[in-house]
Amino acid sequence: MSEPTTGPATESRTHGLRVTEVIAETADAHSLVLQAPPESADRFAYRPGQFLTLKLPGADGRAAARCYSLASSPDTGEPMKVTVKRVAGGYGSNWVCDHVTVGDELQVLPPAGTFTPDSLDADLLLVAGGSGITPVLSIAKSALARGQGRIALLYANRDEPSVIFRAELRKLTEGHPDRLVVIHWLESLQGLPLADRLSAVLAPYADRETFLCGPGPMMDAAEQCLRALGAPGERIYRERFFSLGGDVFEAPAVGECAPAEGGSTADVELDGETRTVPWPSGTPLLDVLLAAGMEAPYSCREGACSACTCRVVTGEVKMLRNDVLDDQDLAEGYVLACQAVPLTDRVGITYS
Image (cartoon, rainbow, N blue to C red; front, top):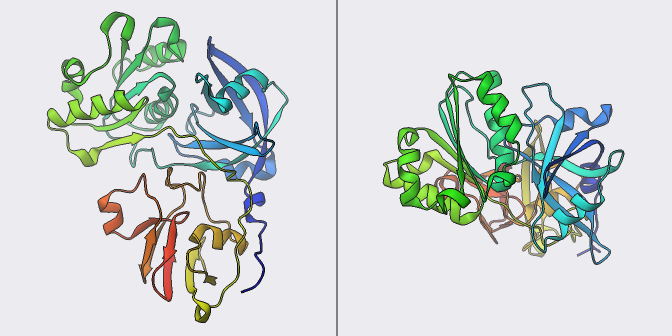
């Protein structure tokens, strides 16, 4: 086995975005309007509901990574915008709100995430809590701009001053009174959004494709309510907030190993090309591809976001961790490249 090697793919996927505006949405939520340089603009085409991973200076001197959803829409002509709400004791959110100013350049990975509708023409139910409004707003704006369906949005907050994008939501409802209904839920007036309390509000929309984003208990309550109303589980999608524990920007170190020495071989179709690379036993597929200079998609590298999803077409793998793929995904051969290790001598992988 040779010495570990690192490849340039991790660094080449990181791009500098200029902060062109900082908007104080509420007392504890700031939006960053971002501009990609012309040479990177095509790498930042995105789908409504996706997120960006920002590189921040870590408290321990190493880089820290934080994922923030895009509140902008790719279908309205507006610039990219992420919104960050302070979290008590949260390093990343407080650093962004306290330090990022107009003119700063942030190192960012391309957009990622699967919290996005297959069709913008379908009738949608969107349920958000707090800063969970960011990807939900992106979906709503795209559906209104490019789709034909009707949209119902339930938005839960502590109180009225906590409502992010209040003016923007009002403008959207005024511009689309026949297609958009926004229902505000304020805990100060209505109490916690528990399943039994949500039933009357969500019942008229329970047959729609549903997207949930917000605190875990709120999403649990909404899903429980919808299932009790007869909504099929496969039409309910959840976006999860998570903090990254490691430095996803650091290039992986991978030891080269021939199959005869205990490793495997991967035949990988990516961006219309197929490459064959050695795959050392116990090494995640994503690390192998990045070290080989392949620009495989990823974001968290921790099995929590699905940005690196690919499909096994031959051979077998196992995943070290999986927080996002369901049983149907697994049955169809989908795996997380950042968590997949080989079980057979040869494995065929496709990203198409």
